[in-house]
Every structure is written in structure tokens, then in C-alpha cells.
Image (cartoon, rainbow over all chains, first blue to last red; front, side, top):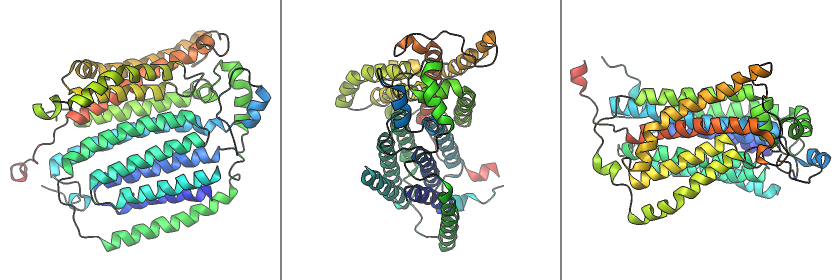
Length: 115
Length: 327
């Protein structure tokens, strides 16, 4: 059920990516998809009443392994979030250039070749 | 606990729908910021403080960049005509794919009981083998450092791409818009906060192997501080302009340093071999190798994020060129 809600979020983003005509809305759609995938990975690694995968001084190692949530998805998601930042900058740069050249961000008006 | 998670998930979904359906672009960008902040609270509840810190600071920069970008272009009247065919086909594709992929979920382990086959070994051996008691950092910068190198390359490429696309477009900047900065109140608060933000960023990066954080989160925190300085004092003010000129070099230097640390592993035998001894556990020097990598990533991410922001912030889109002349 938890997973279904994350999946729903992903497909809301996909819907925005497919249907919206403004390029800014498409960027937002892609951001939602990205958020949903990151969230899904963390949800899969969650353990009921789990603790963060950080060993504290004096903590028993066996107890730590039993109580901790899955650290592997976290390590992968951490970099994916920062990659998302780079991607947003790339997409915004492209959209600004498109707006400068064509005066619009509506992609139904952009699909005509000029010349 | 579960109720809170469900509530936040529904909140995220509502925020996402608002972000996509509101007509005003500024409102949708703010809605996406709300989704990102809600997501970071959710990460915190799900036992992922590293991710929560990174998510919250990344969201701050994303929203700032998007607002700077949309403030300039949202004045064009939104077209009222809705394309029924596009909406219908998009909905059908999304709904059909949703039910197809929902069928795959039954093969996953139930929520709250992760499979944890490899991860169990990481949790058992990570602190002893790498010296990093934050197992996420142990995986990120030691066990799976190859992945991190690849991902750092992706970030570098994306920023270089953004800079290359915007380059040459910096026309004489409208002096009043960027140089004036913000009101006296904002400047005074920023003067107090800036040092704290920079120290926090450094601490998050340096102690990433013991506490939540690491080079990625710390780098974005530092970039946030410089973005704040740029917005509050103006792009020509000392902190913004000095670091602005250095930022792409800092980015490149960080990437090279990370690669150098990896290459020095050849001294011990192979790429990314740890070539520094472990120190006493729970101390800064317990994992000097990971601290060095975190500092390299800190430079890389700070430089990259701030260079990207500056390029997009000073980008002035003028009136569209005359079509007649070109054709």
C-alpha cells in the first residue's frame, strides 16, 4: 500500500511530463518522477521501527545490525538527489535558451521548424 | 508511525497535483518546493537522515533556480485552450502503466521487512573495515566508491553542459536588478547567518563519516550560503563575485582531487585502494581516507552548484531575435 502511493506519485509526474505543454511544467513533472523513485527506494529499505544506519559510541554491534534500516538504497539515493540538482540546472539553461530564441516555452508552438 | 508516513505521502501527492495543475508558474514552483520539503521530513522518519539533509538543501537551490528562471518568463499569457486528446492519451498511458507496474509490487518484500542480504554484511563489517561509523558513507566512499566516481562525473557533465549552453548569453547585466541586492533587514540577517551556514556546511562534510551528512550534503549547504550572499548583497558584492570567479575552477579542482585520491590507490595495489591507516573509532581521524574524499566532493559540489546558479541567475533573456532577419 505504501509502495502503491509512491507509484501513484511517479505516475502523476509522468502524466505532467506527457500532457503539460509548458516546458517549466515538464521540468516539474520530471522532478516529481525523480522524487517518487528516490522515495520508493528508501521505502523498500525501511525496517519497522528501524534506526538510522549510524553506529553510536558504546552501541552493541549485534543490536545495531538488527535494528538498522537498509543503508544501501540510502547510499545510492544520496548521489541521485545531487544529480537531480545538476539536471534541473541543465534543463533550466536549455529552457532559457529556447525562450530567448523563440519567445515562448509552449512546446505546441515550438514544434514548427523555422527557416 | 505508519499513520504519519501515510499522511505525508498523501500530502506529497496533493502537492504534486497542485504543482502540475495551477496556472501560475510561480505558484507551481512553490508547490514543488513544498513537495520537496515534505519528502525530506519523510526521509527523516524513514531512518535516512543523510538523505533528509541533502534533500532539504538541494530543494532550496532547485526552487531558487526555478523561481529566478520563471520570474522572467511567466508573464506570457498561459494559453487557455486545453488539448483534450493529449490529456486523454496521457491519462490512459499513466493509468495503464500504473496498474501494470502495481502487479510487480507483490514480488517485493513487505513494507518494513527489507531483504538486506548484502547490506547485513555492510552493517556488520563496515565500521570495522572502513573506520566510518556512518555506514552510508562507508558504502558510498569505500565499498562502492566506483559508483560514486561515476555519479560525480554525471554531476560534473550536467553542470558543464548547463554552463556551455548559457555561455555567451551574458549580455550587459541590468545593473539595478542584480547589484542592488535586497532590503536592509535581509542584509543584516544574512550577515549574521552566512558564517553559521558556511561553518555548518564544513562540519557536515568533515564529520560525514561519523554523523549524517557528507561531502554531497555539505557542498550543497555551502553553495546555499553563497547563493544567499549573492541574492542578499547582489552579484557584484565581494563574497559573491570572488567566489563566483573561482567557482568553476573549484568544481574542476574537486573533481580532479577525487580522481587523484582514487589513482593513489595504485600505491596500495588497485584503484580506490585505501592508502591511509584507520585511526581510533568515533574520532575525526578514524577514517582519514573518507574525510579526504568528502573534502574533494565538498569542493566539487560547492563549485558546481554555485557556478550553475550564477550562470542561470545572470542570464538575461532579451527580446526574441527578429525572425525576418534570420530567414
